[in-house]
Length: 344
Image (cartoon, rainbow, N blue to C red; front, side, top):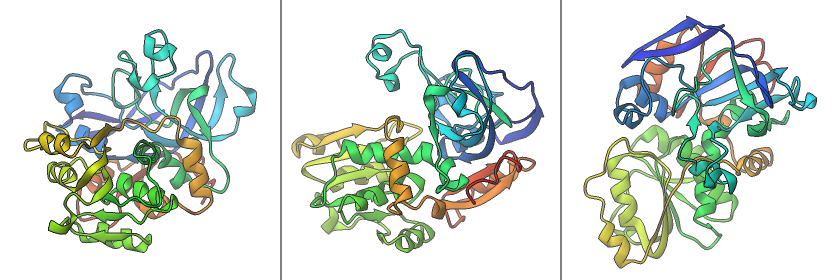
């Protein structure tokens, strides 16, 4: 089968590799669409903290955002999964540590994450295997594009839940990318009126087309104003600004992932204002709620997709991902044209 391979900074190709076989409790999935995100960009340009800290090394198959169709079953897998359109989370926990035994698989110290952490190859391949208990069935009402965006945007639902956002909360979202626009839409569905801050005009325009308020940057009156702040970009400037925006007794969710330590992070201000800071990892446990929000029209994921590239052009896909001039945040790669017809 064909798979995307990163062999070094800005070195990407399509290689022929052996197809996987599903083990006990696993299924074989023919991938329809692969999503590329900021984590993948860090792998592509070599800046990723996973590479720097030795958690990942070239060469490897990237990709952790995907949708596909179940085409094979391993021993013990539910026969009803055959032929189903699915997506799924990418944590592969050890299953034996105290966190795993307590059901807290996000915190497993020995976990791997496909395409990100450890030796598990990513979803940038025509076929992948996945444990059946990691899958979410995708209803016919969702497009393939929306299904491919569930993995990253479920983390945005997690962030809003951690902040316990309600209708009376003043909510600020820093970053008008995939995570930020999803988080803002979820906050709005709860009755809040969030404002999205992003320096890029295209991001602000898209936010407004989604019916959200948008501004280029926080100003003086915004400081210490917001009950709930979501930092969704990972940029140094946004992380610093998020601290300035949190009101006394407020809450902040660090959803974006900086690829280095952030100088000038004002921890003293958080203490003085008695603010709560949440680091948000993954959206495990929040998929079903997100699917319901998309089905009812409260969250529009299709609007976040900029372009869909063919598997034969991974270099163009990654180049577009690195290009800040695109008008929408999400880049997808069509892995298998025959499998990608459902949904839209």
